[in-house]
Length: 266
Image (cartoon, rainbow, N blue to C red):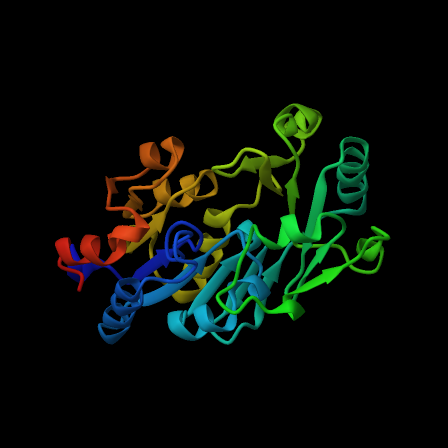
């Protein structure tokens, strides 16, 4: 399959980024370098915004494209916008009303920063960057920054009843709960990593069947099913594992490198 792969797509959290060490394993960085030398395009597909990737990861990946905020923000290799879709006023106001009523912490995602409305420490711990840059976050205890600029993404952190508290929104928006179900990403039903990748791949002239993608969570399911080879990490959720064509070792066991080596891609 090696000669037919033209693009390699990587989720970040739990895939490229190892939660245990809060780093990208050296083996993963080496794997991306090997792919680049063969002319294979690198695409980062993440629920993170551009700011939350962190400068070190951006420099390491040298990606050709970014599909971020679960497909709501598409960027070229220089980080310049190609496409974006924002939440509406009504969606944000409605979700924030639920958050206020139940003590749920909201974080709104923008290209250059994230705006935390409550739970500063809790929210900052969710998407860590290798640098931990303070400027990647802004605290807005007045809960009103969205009145100046509507966000590209939304992360919520509550308690064990979060899914029940958000149940009224399940029909209108897509809610993907993390491995810890007290935290979730919210995005539009017609926007996800795969819809973003479709735009990016069409722009690059690369068919889906010529791509390999790595992921570990529910928001990776669409892209794992759609590409020529979808690979779930050994630490993947059951949904991601079922959607994949193969399963590699966990991120902390150099899963990406070993998988690409076994497939003769590096």
